[in-house]
Image (cartoon, rainbow, N blue to C red):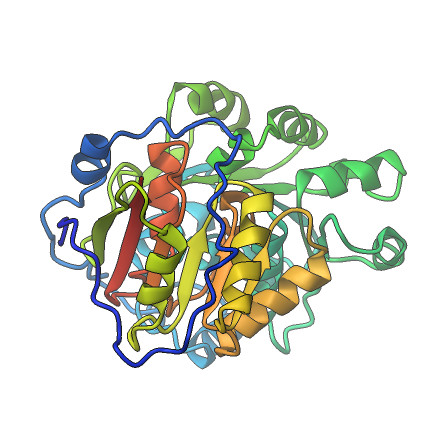
Length: 400
């Protein structure tokens, strides 16, 4: 774990950079509540622990044979900790409170027992997955499709920024799994195109983020509209008193599984602070960093949509291949930008916290906080985009 304030040395023979119009204007957004001591101490990982080793493989778990084949086809051999510790309870129909960060395999943790039940009951029920962001909704549906290939189980994804008439067409056929964001689902329900009481299972993913984004009323209304639900699963990266109030209303005698504290980062992330001296050009420092050959796939965070666009424009003007995602971009644009980033067509993706929540890109080499996040929780989630699947990642934070 490196917490020195030394700037990474830049490559000597880098492309010529134009910094005449580099973004230096201060954001009007309120200042971060994080201080340096909190950043470098509380956000430090705990002492390294032995990786979790499940006592069984997926070949041993009691799920449908066809599902096992698809699990193997996806290259999954051994359950992750969250998968191993929740599987039996979910197969038994218990409500679940799962505290796990992104990158732990929690999507498969709830999909595998869900798909098993669909196959056992021949698809005679519907499940609803509620998520905070468009990107996460798309990823959940993609994971479902991969695990149900050839099994004649169908899904639908309803998110803002897409053609609602197409959604209305989709709702004419039955989907075993519906995944969506609260706003679009509420809109479809108000149009009487979607009936929540058709669902018997409710899954709430990244519940803490939904509350952060102000979806608490929508979430509770949707849950109340499924009074006869047989099972509720709730996943969150963190747990606090505010969330507990809602959880007590949503879950019935849940099994609680916690696989990460939600307050620390993992030992695979090397964190470093970059102090920018008065009069020094922060954007020039960023360009020097990006000129290094090891900065291969870089996720940069800014605090506002306006800043994201500003940083991305300046990167493009300076010869860096980059793209941006934030709430003002259409869903199609965001999906294209993410695809370009995943495939390596662009070196850099600039994003807001909300837009990047739930991004599933396993090989991000570096995370750069161009601006300090407004909370420790946001900081941890930002840098958690790197150092995934056992790989080592690096996170840099600019301090003026």
